[in-house]
Length: 289
Image (cartoon, rainbow, N blue to C red; front, side, top):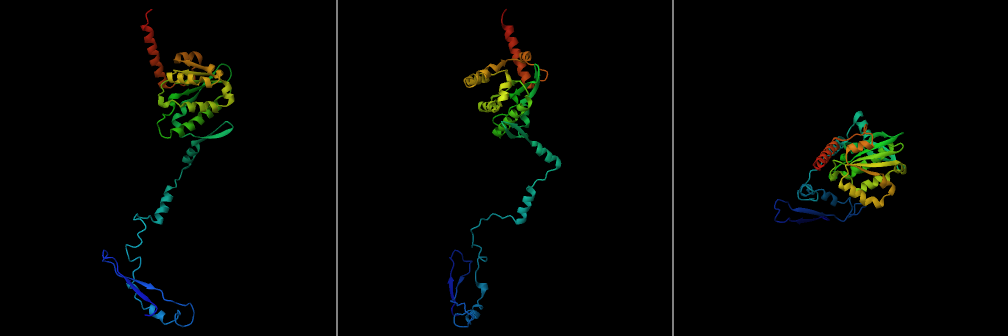
């Protein structure tokens, strides 16, 4: 057969099962329509068709060819589409309403702030309205530290960021005129104590109106830590604010300063108060007359 060169290449002896490969070298052809030598219409083309193609190896016949892809099974297109459909969650009308109630907008500092209400749901009791005192709408704001999240739990920073916006936004809504803050510090572990930076951030974000209208900050059952903290920050806060801070060591003393009718005292605070009062009575009884 003229113009066609057959070459045989034997595989390595390690692969005895493989057949001999045959390679074809393309003949010199001219793309003219005449039947001259080298033309597509020459008699050599008829001879090429006589080759036995079944004896020629192709990549699909050789299991060791094209081993570039990994051996992991590939999901079918229908499987991918089905997983995509399954991942699209359908909500009922009730679930859609619940999802809408998850987010709440608070406005302070001339900006709107979105709060994830679901994330802070267990900690919303940290701030509450305790009624009014004196004449007019002088609000009593109760801040119970025992309801704060522990610092070691997951997403602590995210919870605290949303809780911060909730506290400031709620304070804006509850306060109409003058107000006081009752800070319930008892029954609080160090893990629940907010960081100094968080407290400073709260104070800085409070509107000037709220700073001016704050008449008193009453700290109930103050710990050594909170007293030390206030002593260290005293040089950095205004003297007017320092004069507003008062320490109260029992709920009985608090009742002499604040009307307690609508002040919600957590049970853990009441237990701590009873323990402290019992120790004080025992100490007083031990003192000789």
